[in-house]
Each structure stands twice: as C-alpha cells, then as structure tokens.
Length: 296
Image (cartoon, rainbow, N blue to C red; front, side, top):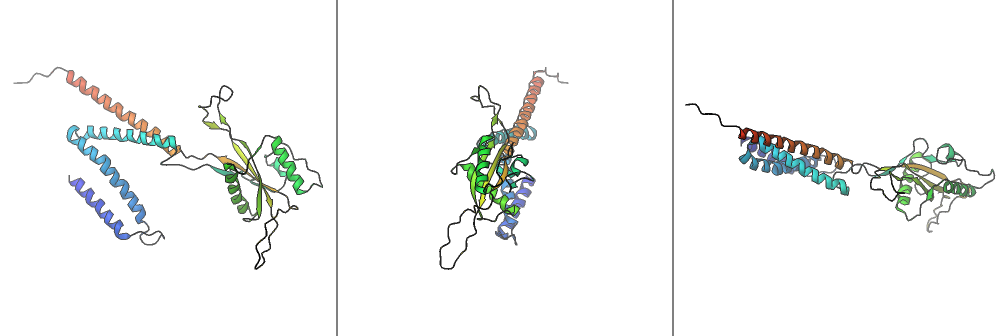
C-alpha cells in the first residue's frame, strides 16, 4: 500500500506541474507540457484500468496468478482492439499511399527521352519538322498503343497525381507554380495477384504489381498584369514542348502497425493462456495425489 501511495502522490505532483506550466504551442516556455500531459494520460489510464483489475484479482488469487490472468486478459483485449484497427484501417496507422518519384528520371523534358527512361518500350516516331503539339499527339498515341490508360480529369487518381507532380516540377526547377497546365495523366500496372478462375476469385490477391503514372504538362504563356484590368486567361505556349513527370505508386503501410500489434498480442495471449492451462493441470495433478500421513 505504501507503493500505491507513493505512485499516486508522484502522479498528482506531475499533474499539478503540467497544469501550472500552462499550454504553449510556440515551442517556448511550457511547450513540453503537452507531451507531459499525454504521458500522464497513458500512465493514469493504464494504472486505473489494469491496476484496478489486478488488485481485485490479487485479493482472491494471489499475486502471481492474478498477474498472469490480468496479463492474459490485457493481451486478449489488445488483440481484439488491434484486429478492429487492422480491418478498418483506423487507430494507430502507418504511412499513407503516395506517388513517389522515379530516381533520376522523374521530370522528362524531351520526347525522345521517354523510351530511354523506360517509360515507353519503343521510341516515339516524330518528324524533324513536327510542332510540339504534333509531338504530344504522337506521344499520346504511343502511350495508348503500349497499354497505358488515360485517366479522366474527374478521377481521384488524376488529381492526386497532378498534385504530386507539381511538387516534383517545382523542386526540379522546371516550372513555378501556375506556369503550366496538366494535359493528360497516363496510368499502367497496379493489378492484384494471384487470381484464379479467370480473375473472378481474388480474395487471396494480397499482392500488387508496380503501378506507374505519367503526368503530361504544357507550359503557359506568361501573363502580363496591367493595373486596373482583370488578368487574362493563361494560354498554352504552342511553341514550347510538353514535359512529363514519371512516378511510381507507394502503397504505404497504413495497416502495418495495427497488423503487428494484432499478431504480437495474439502470440502473447496464447502463451499466457497456455501457462494458465499448464498451471491448472499441475494443480489438478497435485490434488489427485494421496495425502501424506500425518506424524504423531
């Protein structure tokens, strides 16, 4: 009981310290109080939840058996909670899916470099006198011929890829924000496998093939802003070649933490239950032995 009294006093003192520090989100004095309050919340929650159950069982089972039963119950509860997290993708989550750059070949500024970068299998056949628009049309035809799928502007992947491409274009120095227009987005890959019965049975298709996407952008003619007049609508520069942003889909690890907690908690729960089972067998065996004769 002295230990409980000391722990309760220490937690109370820390709580008063956090309350006196006051909130501060500017990383100045008292900025660490949010972290301290979070730690205190976890400590108090664990102490109240598990500690109260343990102390109740302690009065009926003894210290060792009560701890084992409480620990097994906690592992089972963690297994159920993490299982729900794993199924619905909530709770403790990992990295979200994103479009990652292809190293060394993310921003392609020349049509002839598309095949050299591995985007297209065959070189794009463009005449020496072709305009940038004609070259872009030839690239579009080549993408479709090689199995790439043009995405509709209203598709969710269209906007996500265009947003990711903007960051890589600005980072590479090819364009500034608002100096270009997205013309097309081409997608390929990403199929799930393995599938059976001509693809109709796919409940075991947990793996994916790499998914690639290419965002085609066209430069805009710089707009001159005149005082007192509304800005004109930017027009595509027909004399400048189109550029392409090559990216690969990173599936992320959104459910990985929950999956690891689920599997780990299940293992701990099974081990704890097995220990309880073996202890119960030993108790039953010992009780079945004949009583020793008492000595006079």
